[in-house]
Every structure is written in C-alpha cells, then in structure tokens.
Image (tube, rainbow, N blue to C red; front, top):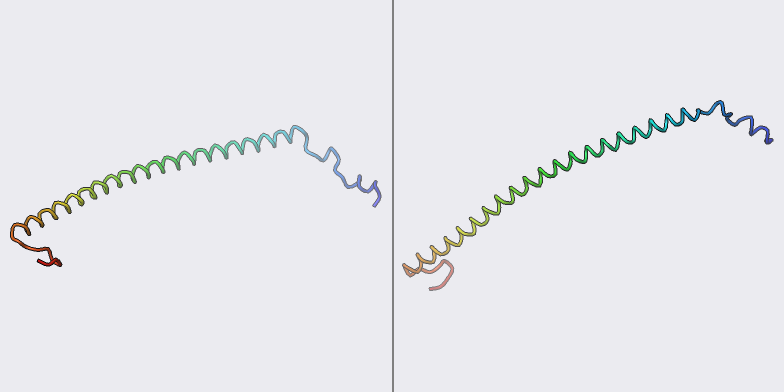
Length: 99
C-alpha cells in the first residue's frame, strides 16, 4: 500500500462535524448528564426520607417492646414474690424441692 492510498481513505475536514456542531453536541450531552445527576439526587433524597420513616417506626417498635419487656419482668418478679409468700404462709415447698 502506497502512502498516497492512506490519504485517499482518510476523512476530509468537510466530512467532519463543524466545531459548532461538536460544541452543541457536547453541550447537549452535558445537559443530559446534569439532568441524570439531578434525578439521582432526587432519588437519593426520597430514599433518605423513606429510611427516616423506617428508622422512626423501628424506634417506636423498640420503645413498645422495651415497655412490654419491663412490664413482663416486673410482673414475673411480683408473681415470684407472691408465690413465695403463699408458700411461706402455708409451709409449702416449691415443686421439685424437698421439704
């Protein structure tokens, strides 16, 4: 292949987009990228709000369960004390214990 053959197959400047066309294309691509990032930011904000709601609900559930646990612990202690008082008053032994 001769060097002149290379020049016959290359593009000429007239076939390339103009600088104005390339700048317009780049500007359009940049605008698309900005919109994509804006959409991503909006989606992340929405996800954060949903996660805040989940965290709030979880904390409320934790508070309810903590109250239930404290109440159950208190009731268990009260029931043990009452059982001991009844056994003591009547000289009873706890099942499984020897007299």
